[in-house]
Amino acid sequence: MSVLVTVKAYPTVSQQHGEAVCVAGIRTDVIPHRWVRLFPVHYRDLPEEQQFKKWEFIELDVQRGSDTRPESYVPILETIRRGRVLGTGDGWAERRTIVDPLLQSSLCVVRRQRKIDGTSLALVRAQDLQAEVRRGGGAEQCPQRHGGIGVR
Image (cartoon, rainbow, N blue to C red; front, side, top):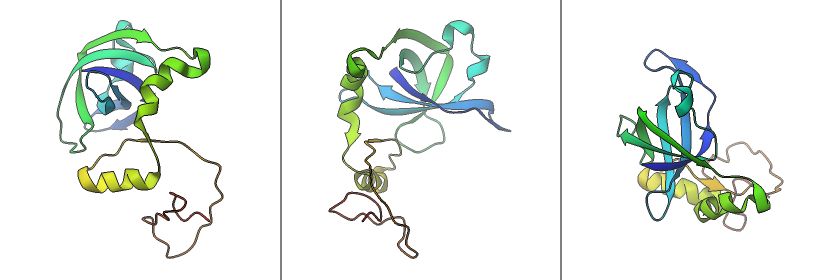
């Protein structure tokens, strides 16, 4: 699998996995590109030559684990091969070429997709919105005219 790493979460400790991080990225070995979650990644235990950065391409073997979300895989850590790091020049032009096609129009679209197939990773552009918290509104409100949750 070929992945552009976009997120490395803060390490957590569990009895099952010890200290591990969750890594999210974009699969670039498939068309169209799609999100991927890699867990557990024992990042601090990786040899230095395998300790990848955010916005770096990596190649690795993976397998399915018990997580049923469609984008979730268990990485086979010893197979990690590091690649090129995408820079920030020209207004993030290289990064935007890969990321922008994955942009969703609203959180409501993301929630609908989650109900269909369990997808849990997405990219939504933040907007400067004013929100109001109301009792009894429920988390599933999606006003069509705003594409947001409980937004006025």
